[in-house]
Amino acid sequence: MSKKLIVAIDGPSGSGKSTSAKIIAQKLGYLYIDTGAMYRAITFLAIKDDIMDHPKAIVKAAEESDIKLKYLNGATQVFVNGDDITEYLRTHELNEKVSMVSQIAGVRKALVKKQQMMKLEGEGIVMEGRDIGTVVFPDADVKIFLTAGLDERASRRAKEYEKKGKGVPVHKIKSNLSMRDAIDSTRDANPLIKADDAIEVDSSKISIEQQVEIIFQQVKKAAKSKGIKILS
Image (cartoon, rainbow, N blue to C red; front, top):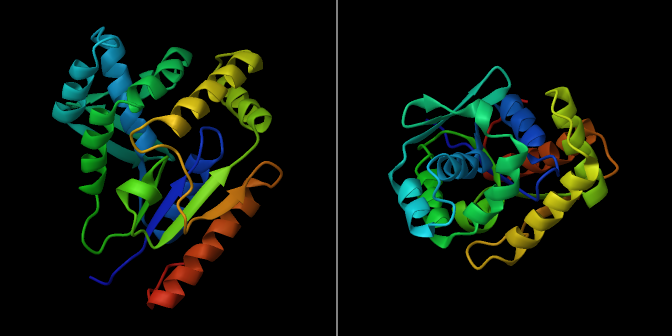
């Protein structure tokens, strides 16, 4: 099987990572992996099992849980130990706690190992998260760092909640995003930082179509330099 690209898309919550990664993966016919869903899955278990105050128990859950991601009909479905927990992963309560779980070094170590094992020989991957280009796949062929202003990101997240019939005040969302930014960027284990060789894209004032086109041009450039054929 001919070699295909590994595309790493990093950035803070609400910057457009998921939307861009899904579209790029679809255009290329590549495997799409949402690593944030994995951290949400462990957070869900921590809340369900009432172990949020017990880091060692959370690490054990991360190490021992069987996490499967399936991208179907435009959405990522998350299974833990065979159970579909997708519908529980986007609640406001979980959003408030996921950064606390994801900053635990043992959790990150366990999930990074699982993420790296998702790389199959010869299969193209578009993986999005916060440490893909720096830790999970530091040798990725394409590294993108997406960003956007806090107000814009809060507005986007509010609209997502509205579509699901779950109105959450923008000021609460903004406060939560600000807190998550601080935790993600300053944690000791695999902080959210731009890889030295990543292309930074500010999505604050551009459309999703423009955002995707910028990223896709980088993908085409990398493919050409490596002699790799892509679908589009």
